[in-house]
Amino acid sequence: MIDLRSDTVTQPTEGMRAAMASARVGDDVFGEDPAVNQLEERVASMLGKEAALFVPSGTMSNQIGIRCHTQPGDELFCDVNNHIIHYETGAPAALNGVMCRTFEGQQGIIDVHHMDGQVKGDADYTPRTRLVCLENTHNRGGGKIYPLETMERVARWAHQQGLAVHLDGARLWNASVATGISLATWCNSVDSVSVCFSKGLGAPVGSALVGPKEFIKRARRIRKMFGGGMRQAGVLAAAAIYALDHHIDRLAEDHIHAKRLAELATAIQGISLGQDSVETNLIFLKLDENLGTAEELQHRLQAHGVLALPTARHTLRMVTHLDVSREQIEHTGQVMRQLLSNRSE
Image 1: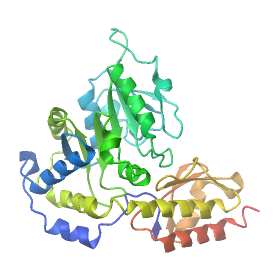
Image 2 (image 1 turned 90 degrees about the horizontal axis):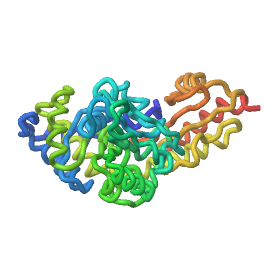
Image 3 (image 1 turned 30 degrees about the vertical axis):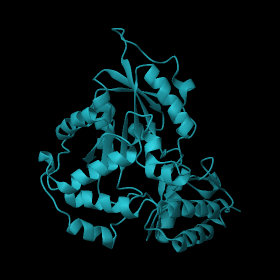
Image 4 (image 1 turned 180 degrees about the horizontal axis):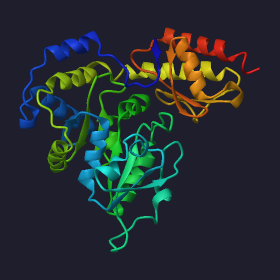
């Protein structure tokens, strides 16, 4: 089966499994797990921040970040298609009591002009605007890379308004590899960052929240409150460390495969690209109505050994990752052409 639903479906490699099996461990709630401590120090250094906190998931990392920056009744700004809006089960409201003010960006990219003049102050009858949340790369934006100059401009503006900036950098590794811009440069202008090890890097579990020491000290307490305190978590941290050692540079292969898959798919009459271009490893394909719905195509592809994910009635998402080869990309294009060529006429 060729699984293109997400880069979260990757299986740990043999080398990663060996690293997990040999990891030295301790009780991380007591701060005594050497592998977790090593991972946190390394990630903080890579992103140019003071400290990091290992957590089970990207959702938890984002929500701890929001909790650290806000109080119940506050408001945050983000793009209407941000991950925290669509894929975190209402957690800003349910866990943190925070309202989300959304803005319609371009493939997930919001700029100062979207938000300028919208910041609420300390009036008794309004929520207080306290935070701007950005996403790089942007999932529902088709793996769009947030332009560095735009991110820095937004951060400068936010800080001038007295707002903090949190970056959901689940796939920040992809942005760095695609642009050649260092992780630390991407993170320099923002206050906190969440990065995932369980997507393109191929680890089975884990994310990290990164920021100033005092921020992470508070975040550690909130992680415990949210049920994220882990004990002998070094077996998981070892997988993330292995991924940092072996799986960052190879993300370029995923980007090449994604561009090739988009090329093959859009050569079929009735299929177009649902984004400006393919910049990283996510592809959104739009289907003409005569080709049927995305869900129908999903089932037909699955019957031929290819898994994909409908995201709208006529939109299908495909994601390349380390368990998908160039040969499988070519085969997927061939299957799609066989299934759809007759229907497009």
